[in-house]
Image 1 (tube, one colour):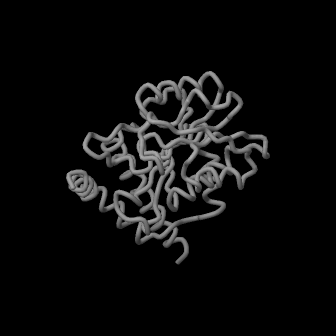
Image 2: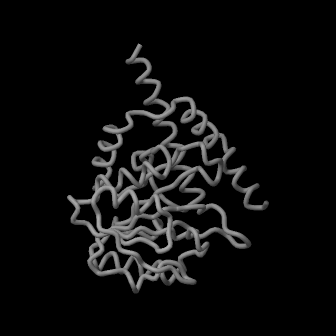
Length: 233
């Protein structure tokens, strides 16, 4: 019985990862395979997993937007990181004020919360350059990334990542509804194995019914149609 249940779960989680890979390629311009998608119980679990894997024994310094979304930086603080606040202005995160010794930078480039601004193209390039110079990693919280009032939504920052430094965190809480509690991490290849192991240690499998329903909803084109309709609204 347990073996059959495990096979059912694995089948649906694979279907969901494949569906998410296709969706982010279409909706967020991120080129990835199903093997690169780690399904999480919402963005909060994604941040907790990233903090668990990336924070090195309390020695990490993590830069985050100020003001910003508390759940992101709180996850890293709980893992022992030192938090560094970086101000937000009209073009988003002020890249010039990121401390050089910050090993991780948390950013919401598509729709900053609570200020509502988007990280400008020039600041996106500056942030990626900073990460390369400082040997830093970037946590991209694609909060509300599929909606932008009056204009076309910006592509995800992950699309410009050629150095393997950006960890993309997506969720379906805004495009669908908050109680869905499903999200994903798209991580550089060198970190995937550790993230999968951390997830299995804390949450062996999610809700099979919800995962299978979401996989079908995406695969049949219903999510794309729903997002287009909501963008018009």
